[in-house]
Image (cartoon, rainbow, N blue to C red; front, side):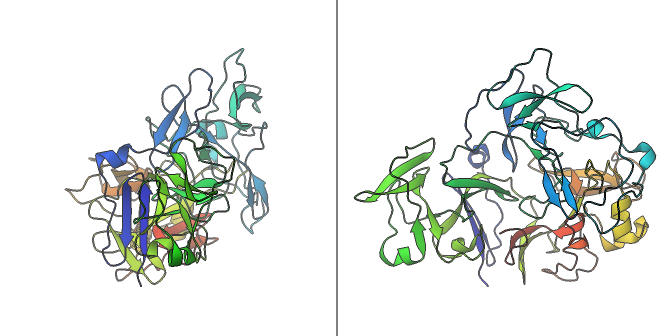
Length: 455
């Protein structure tokens, strides 16, 4: 099986093939490339910060990422906030709602006596007295009577997990491009600077450019700057993305003339196309054709050295140096405030119940942490080496008794599966509730041919 993922960010390419097992080819020039966004007026004290994977996001004066909590349909109802109506309150929630699971609401939550209120985990972005609306920025009334900022109607918050500029650890969906864990918070940011025909979607490898109907966008290596060489038989497989008659170039977007009166979009001087045979949208299928590449507006950081892309019979996963599949843990509790439970600072009862029936020793057999070697290090913010106490599941200091030196992704530990015996095994993918969409483990998919992660 020949599979490849090829990424364009200006003149920058990422190729992931089953034959070469290439990882990110990253340079300082590539790392500096950022997704272009629409400049908007903001109230004093706010800024736009570029973060890894998510791209440009809004931040407060200290650089902390701002988040929204949009309404999300769940199994038995909706959770999240309507525009103009924040509900994150200072009163701790003590029981479940029954929105996500087949179990009835009213069950006592884990660690109920110390469970924080929503506003303790998600501090509202308060508006000073006399604050006036600016563009899409408005002032709304919080449930406790305080005034807070909102963007495009959605109330804004920071996360207690974010410690420095560029952190976006509050995003409770630890699987971008994949299934959501309940009603997830997400970073708020300015709109991408793209024509209305296009959209941008977040995946683990970066910000993927698509059509508004989600079809992937491709470029052709044989094209020249602002000139298409895809003609004749080439057009049976790929279709130019035509520009409407009255549109104008914008930012990195230009318009070329294929023939008299026929205009085509070009991104960073490279004509763009869709793949006629694409079965899933979006996908990397067109990049399997020699000379064709997916377009990413911003590329994610490289995986740590020693990690590799491994083939499975369902696609490609991220693996350690021995080819063992790496897993991510996702968790949102079934409370009205939908607090995250995937981070080591949060209740471990859900994770321990799934991996070891409450026994942490058993969890270390079923889902052991991925240990970091003595000489290994991270070259990005999104990957880190940290120390964890396997008994409590909490982050600890390096010299603490029993501390394990482990790899972390988005400030959460990554795992291996005790059932995997050979490179390419992924026996634990979907282990948990609702195929691990609410509580459980998913393989770190780079490309899933069955589309469970949308690619």
